[in-house]
Length: 248
Image (tube, rainbow, N blue to C red; front, side):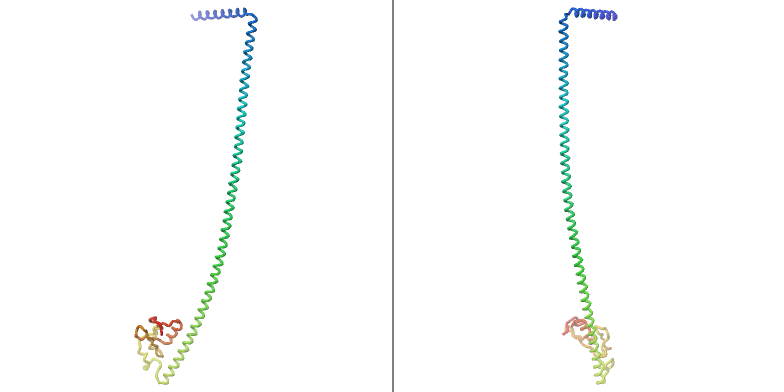
């Protein structure tokens, strides 16, 4: 069955071709020319349309390329402007930093100068104080030396006065025939008290003791007169040594 179908199809197809050829042969020459012209016109129109399309595409491409180029140029210009602005900002910041550093340096220099001036002033003050202290110490030493000399002079005077008194007492004792040292006739030899200043026993004195009464107490307080005089002169205080009362 398949083979029969194939044979019938091929036979039918061949018949059709033969019919077309016969028709073409029957067509006139004018019709053939018209058809050829139509075909040429169609081809021309197609070419024209294609050219239009090509030109349009080229125009679009060029416009797009120009727009992209302009965009790129604008971006480059903006980048350059930003670079210039950043450079200016950097320069301005650098100038501000430099000014701040200069101000800080000036402040530091002024502070150092003030420190140096203060140190110099302190050194001068210290030197002046040292000199004043040295002068005060010298004056104190001079005063101490003067006081020592006065004490020596007073001691010499007291010693001379005591020697004169002893001589006078000896003379009086020799004249009266009485003993001036520790013996039976010296009434102070019976006393058991000690001198409050020298802590020596009063009974061993070669001359009679000195009674320095107190206002508050009626008790007698015996002193070695020479030692008491020396103590009053050396201390320059007219005070009772025991009660600290003023001496009239």
